[in-house]
Image 1 (cartoon, rainbow, N blue to C red):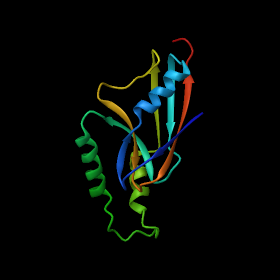
Image 2 (tube, helix red, strand yellow):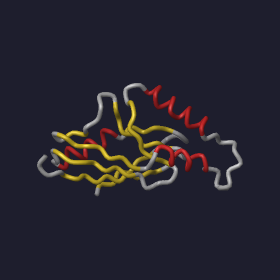
Image 3 (cartoon, rainbow, N blue to C red):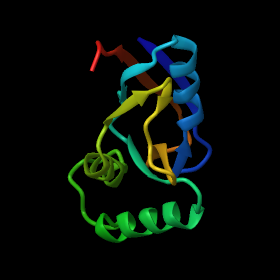
Length: 134
């Protein structure tokens, strides 16, 4: 298993980690298989979305803020209930196919750590699985 250590810089942000995951794939020598990517935190998650236009990520954060506003009377008293809920909505794991030694992503897709309670030190765990012959 590989462990990525990441630092976020804002309360909420989408941190593009595609290059870091791709570097692990290339270093592994795996030509065909799967990358299983997991975030072991309850206030940040993972998603795949457009990496070319940062406005898309800003729009997603805006929509999540409307769906999960900060000002509701949440029972959890640490002040970060919205972060827990947003993480549940985006999810904490991804599986991406590997083909010809590359992550098999769409033209515009990237892999993002979704920070909802930063800035913080975060971990992402990656397991690379090599497949047999197709």
